[in-house]
Image 1 (cartoon, rainbow, N blue to C red):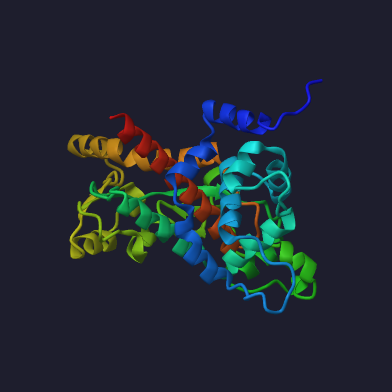
Image 2: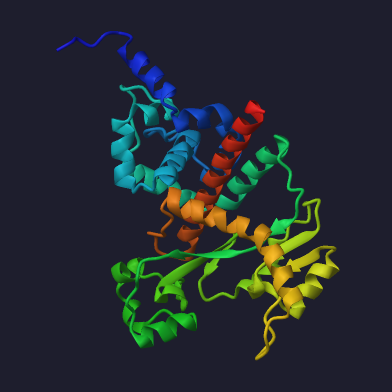
Length: 331
């Protein structure tokens, strides 16, 4: 057996680069240090004057969440693969002799971000990075929602009634272990007849019972977008929404509904077909997230689901940013 040489590690990393290491491309393209101020504010670590082992660098930990999201990994699997893969260690700036965060540390870091409600600021931070790089929203905006599966709860009818009315079921209140494993925010929808969470096209997260159309008037429209068109499917078509869009200076491109008990007029069919060509692009985003990152909510509660889905959105934007930068470089 050949004895390991001093440069063998460098040669293996060079080979990984030649094979197209996605994480290395992330390191070259994304300025992860830009997230540091928001991470430090959310984590509010002490100054270390009381002693104890210092926490891991917050940017390193955030990059671990990026790895986890890209590869749809559990915390335990994340710990194992960071120790196992050279590409992961290079992305994190870790040497073989460095201490690697364990699964519990990864969970605690994500939990602190969750409790601090940090995901919206982190999402906005990268959105600002995209704008500063010249990627401005100038072609209108497309609204849609997707359903993200959550674990099946198997609650009784009485428990479901309590949850719908905002109460904790009586037989859960003296069982903290059971309560910690019960998701009081997930709701059912008829689609696929499974418990789902709902995700809009940007970041807002709701339960699956929430109406798509009502969300339009709750801050989904981006007033900084330089084009006025708003594309969406018929779930968003209502007089209240049309008035809201017009009042805020936008132009509705929302699909029109079929008249009740009447055939769809040909001119509306043609109009809807033209809108579908544009509107379908947002569905590609959801499809990409679910196929590439295996988007599934393993956590309990809408607060934790928000950071899980929010991270998926951030990572999608990072991948898209990488694609656009490569496209511009080859032009």
